[in-house]
Length: 263
Ligand code: FE
Image 1 (cartoon, rainbow, N blue to C red):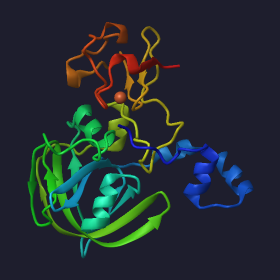
Image 2 (image 1 turned 60 degrees about the vertical axis):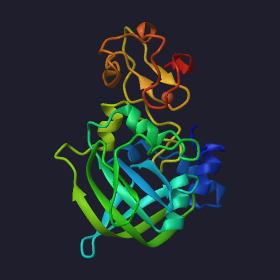
Image 3 (image 1 turned 45 degrees about the vertical axis):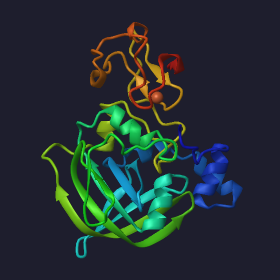
């Protein structure tokens, strides 16, 4: 169910490919850099939808920013392996839904850790269509931007699409989700195809002294007994061992047996 990651080979190989370097010594020097510096970059959390002629999909993205004000343009960075990438290439349009802090992990997991080639992600989600005819996700959305692609840049594993906003609107007054909030409060991780994915991404929460945290081996979600899983009725302070057998990973839906004790 998980997308195959761009760090499929060795870390060194992946970095070399990512940076476009051919000089091995230079690459080795780069691997000694402190990549945790990258975790200080701030982002939001968005759903990007795209498609045409009845074929639509959506995915989570954290790499979106406004490029110019007049005309109003934005840029997004999308992994070439993702189905949404294929649909943007085809339709030359996309919609950005800016998520609120209230978006539950199951919702983020649906768009972040499952492939649109396997499941119809938009089936049970509230949407509407506007100027681009691309479904605009309205659940847990603060505002949305409808975009027509104007330029694109090949960046190796990813493509940066730059486009003109042809329509946009505010959906709710809720607080927009930042990527830091997603990581720290929600315990979220990057999918392997995210530009920000890193194998050594630190766990969202330090392991508590008394009760252990457990990691989902499928998606990397960390169950922290200190926080519980309030989105699914599990109170803070509930040990992993005490979770009901029916409990599943709030992000990817894997059952308890797929969890391993965090080291
Ligand atoms: Fe999971």
